[in-house]
Amino acid sequence: MKKFFCEAVANNGGAMEADTISKNGASSKSHTSRANFFRKAVLALSVVSIFSATSISAQEKGDMAFGGHLMLALDDALPTAGIGPMFQINVSETFRLEGAFTYFFPKKEEIRVWGTNIETTLNMWVFSVNGHYLFPISDKVVLYPLAGVSIVGLKATASGGGQSASASNDPENSSYINIGAGIQLNISDNARFNFEPKYLGGAFMISAGIAFSF
Image (tube, rainbow, N blue to C red; front, side, top):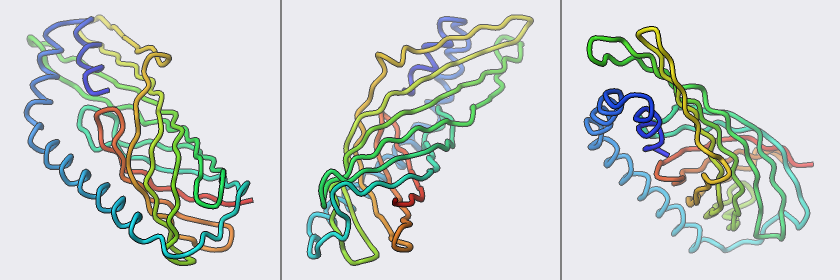
């Protein structure tokens, strides 16, 4: 996903691509430290969940929940925050499927190329289907590793010097693997909070949401 913006800009002006790549290069160290931190977080949650399966899940096959979530992309090249709905269904007492759609607020930047101010905008949406393997720790806490697939839509636009251009990816050919882990806190009998660090298409994400069972 990260290189789409550079490729889109390249199709509409090589100088703009060079500027964007230089920005990404300047922040490579921060990306590396973030990546290492969240790799460790995902690994830790996964390991704890595997060795903590000591109680029986209170959730039953066929249980469903609907809610909303906030997602943050920890990558300077992508839009920062997105929101959207999610739906969960228990295939069994220990395995759950989740579908979620996320619309990211557009990322806008202004860069200067050859003496001209260029305004750039990157729009993004993500549709994900993930499987959760549930390890209840108590009546209130559930840990789970997650894996699945996401379809990502991206559109980059640039304008300046009296000209404008745009480019979009093909969502049908833009699917990515998700892998991560999560923690679920049962707020009440029919409400639960989920927090998930995950790796999606070359970028680290954090998702937090609330779902209500019915």
